[in-house]
Image 1 (spheres, rainbow, N blue to C red):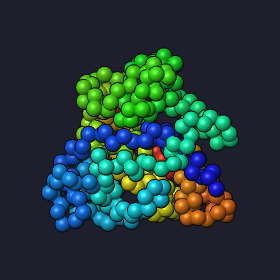
Image 2 (cartoon, protein in one colour):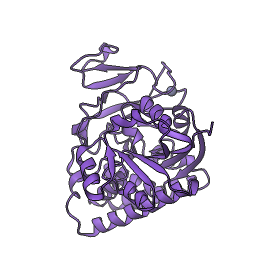
Image 3 (tube, rainbow, N blue to C red):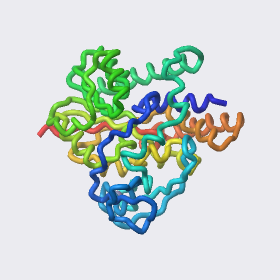
Image 4 (cartoon, helix red, strand yellow):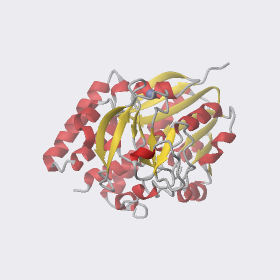
Length: 347
Ligand SMILES: [Zn+2]
């Protein structure tokens, strides 16, 4: 019964959230298009000191004011609340409307499955977890080295407990991590002596890094456009920005609709199509798109779990994941999750 959720935990482990709970310390949104509300929709554009959620009246990526109603999605994993998704018809960005603001989203990360693995290191699931984690880290490292043969300075934004960063340091890279969760930061520092700081320090860097990575992190970041600009600014000329995010235009997303596990509202604030990522990240050139084949399995299995579809559902989930991967085989931009590799111009 718990297999799917455990597998999905592995999937989520790529990001910063799986073991350590969000501590709610992310700075407030700086999006100019953001207005805050507490309960009523009619008080848009009024910023209240007691506001708890964010209502967007224009697209943060392209500024479009006319937004489409896209989908109503329940928070299957934690609260059971439903959230409306809005879609920008121009750049195709979808976002979680009335998202909890940065100071109030913490409780939505607070569910037992996320912490159940924090200390126990025995059993099949942990074995599987360690195996997939190690495999994925090697794949990520291979991708980095495909573009940058010689180790240089690497920043992992949303590094969690630093597993990927530690691997890269062992390969000779000079690694820096940024992580919002204080417990995860401490663990990365104490266990592996990594240089991990609060994400607020991102703005301090200018043309500092050869490679910057974000593994399933950007969809959680309230300050979407400001953070993206800072990331590009922190890259050296010729440097790489590698961003992995779920893709709502994939086959499995379309198949499962509101039950697609990678909507993961309200923890995922932004839902990207390839077109919206390319519009968002400016000042760099997209040089490659890659699929993440494991993700469609995790997401499809968990989506079936949300539908309470039992053993037949698990089999169907595997089949759908395979179909999704086959469709993405020659077009990675159709994959359930896509890795975008951007390069900053030399001059
Ligand atoms: Zn837009």
